[in-house]
Length: 211
Image 1 (cartoon, helix red, strand yellow):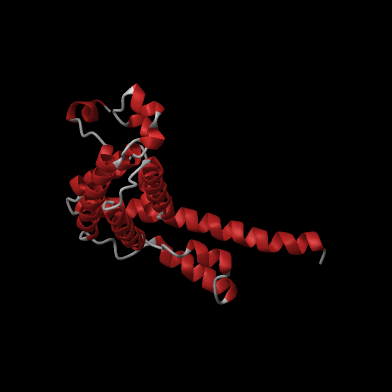
Image 2: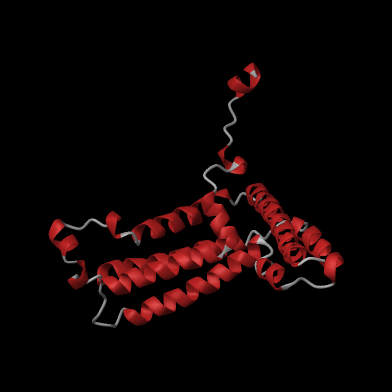
């Protein structure tokens, strides 16, 4: 077996596992959204998504209502009001997450099929496969995100008594929040989807009759 062949086999194995996990993740998200819709939880999910998008945008200084003088001297500006808003918003997002968590998830998820396939291949997942299995279901991802939010809220609360509530501190809090969002795969997938069939379908009797 050539060195090129040896190098290709682990790479192909990982790409195959990654593809299977991506497909399973998409189907899991779809099943979870259907489950939320069936249990009348769409409003709670919409509320959570709105707050997440809102806070993400809030940490972009371009969206803040600042005057030209303030924008030209950001480094010396006091960001205590913005940090207070961020703290209260994080609290609200935590409550929204817990409301969504209360709806649970479907009993059967595609992840089960994926993990069985991986076990049959080699007895135990390799390092790369294990990395993509850290958040196997939407509820695992949501629980992980709630823990991250709690840590961030404690950190923000500790800075509120500091005299140096400046732009770098505000920027740092925003970066942590962005990393937490990207680090939770199902939350990231949820925010990436602009159109959700489960919630965005319009039931128009006249159009349906014509079709």
